[in-house]
Image (cartoon, rainbow, N blue to C red):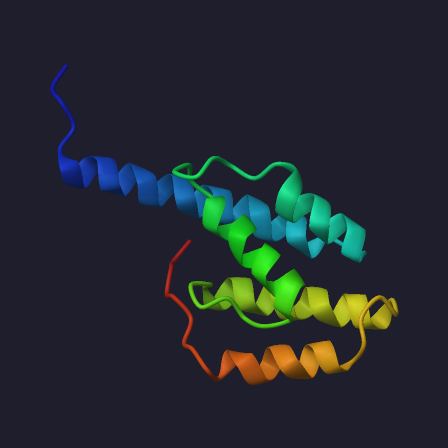
Length: 115
C-alpha cells in the first residue's frame, strides 16, 4: 500500500473535523441548561491534536466570556447565540449576555468551514 501524501492526510483531517463538527453542533442544539453546556464543553473533549478539540475550546470560551470565539465558524456562532438565548429564556443568564455576544461578533469575522 502506498503512503498517503501530505495533502491526503490534510484532507482526512479536514473531513474528520467536519464530521465531528456536525455531531457537536447537533448535540449543542439539544443543550437546555448551563450545566449541560459545561458537561458538553468539558466532559468529553478530544485530545489537544484530535479532531474536534476547537469546538470544545470555543464553547468553553463562550461560556466563560459571553463573547464569540475568534476561531469559531459562522455555524458555531449561530449555535452559540441560540444556546445563550435558551439560557436567558431559562433564566440562567441575564439578557445582557446575548447583547454582549452579539457585540463581540462584530469584532472578529468567523472562520469559514464547509460541512
